[in-house]
Image (cartoon, rainbow over all chains, first blue to last red; front, side, top):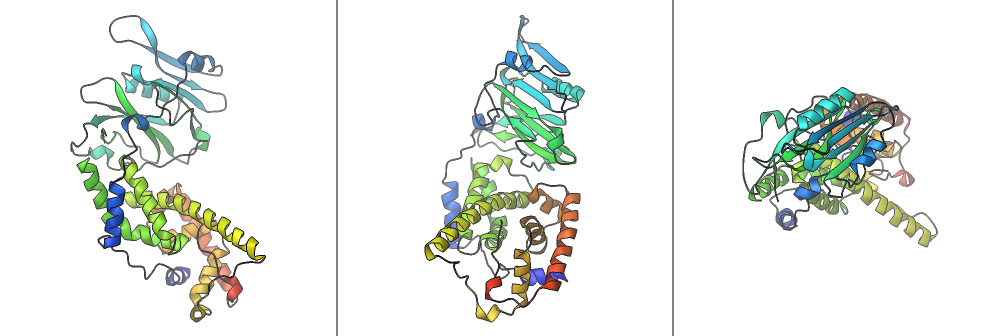
Length: 212
Length: 175
């Protein structure tokens, strides 16, 4: 009964909105004339945070610090990432993007720490190129998340190093933070990343992104 | 870029009407064009973030923009009321004064914004529970619980509602 009454009270029941009407088409033309502000660099969540500082701050609990080499048989240069679990159930993650050659190893470190975070890899394709969206990425419907759930130090600042705190207690139920890391075809150096929250089923691969 | 433009144009054509109606329901016909414009502009700029099932994402974006617009309207109204030294009169269509629609809108106005939005998404946008949950950023189960409780509260309010006069005309939208 209440549903019927509600529908009868719809103030927009008689609103006709034709996307092909001149007014709507004018709006469409104005919008697509706007510059695209989401660039490859801005897609990256980044922070200029020293790796050593991150490790020094990881005083509590388990520290899973997995250093990687530079990849040329040389000595240890810097750690690609660090995952630290704190006593309050939160996690501190630091990623050195330029050194991240093996996202699967980062995923393994997150899993060992028990962090509800999934790292996916995807391709950054040249602007204007076309390609099928992988079937595994189709169900992806990312949600924004609160700064309480995932707190990036400087979310809008592009940098090669990035740090964030994950607080599972502030996640929605069955929520998982997904971080997509993109590589140009044939490259082993990430070109960017983005993050979002999913509830329930987690995608197994990332949709490709296109360079702008 | 052409692929992006093609995708955006298809998205615009598919969802323009739904977003317009969503905006009219939240901020009224006068302010709706601004909300619609802003919503699609955000979608254009963040096209890579728009999921294949785009409508809940668009509604969630429009919801945030509408909330800003309503805050602006409230500030403007408060300023007007201050200048006048009394509450600004609300527009009323006399033909609707005894209409059941006004009783429902008055009942909605007496509910929390959370209850209102749950009911509107279900009854006006007619979203499936999973999509409505995406708009609200909660789980489908949580949405269903909220909807059940909101319906009960609305039914109680309608049962107690008195004939609506001029002073009880509701303010639509987010609070």
